[in-house]
Length: 282
Image (cartoon, rainbow, N blue to C red; front, side):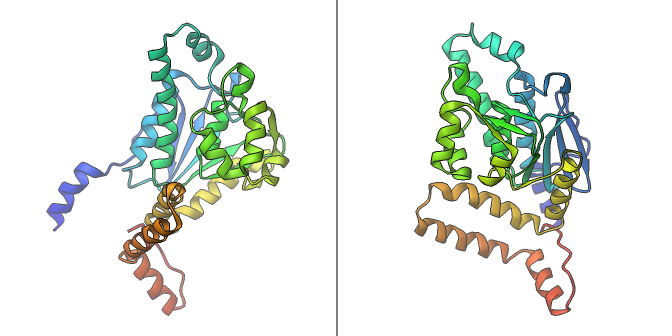
């Protein structure tokens, strides 16, 4: 059996401990990865290269066995100002339709990779969170913000539709259709207090405590039943397009699978012994 598992692991799992990133910061400690958009002098804008590398990173996380939660943040006092005006927006003006479609599919693939990886993603949002930066926070599973943060889906303000990178599908499910419509039609900024009130931010944190609070939550999730957490993320995403009958059946199958895990047995034995369970993600 061990030999069979070794062969299976070789094709379906990977370790991220030695992973290095070129276009963003990456650290991994005790099962929690921290991704830092790190161009603070320009409010951490994205480039063609960083889009692609972020997409590939989140794709790799789908098979990573040593990463159990992810924190996504920006360097300095801002989260992300969106696509770099000079390195992305300028070149897009002169591209032909097939190349523009390649770009928009690339950006959408990043969101798909974030939603498909089993690890919960916590966005720690301070300062400017605009355009594609707002999309990255939206595509995360949890969002911590600050009172001074300003989140803007500003595509309308640059002559584009608000339907970018899944915004028209994801944002209404987070804050409601009417509120999402207002933000996508106007491109205005949503303040930190408003974002928390509308349910976009899970909580507001002081700027100097933001990263620590997000990482603390990531470590809390990391000590939970991480296989089951991955199932929860999958079902939260997939059930959007299901009927209630389909969702209940899908959840019945998913929960039965979780009942086969070692973590489920561990929890039972710990409860019987009046102890706290130590989950292993298996």
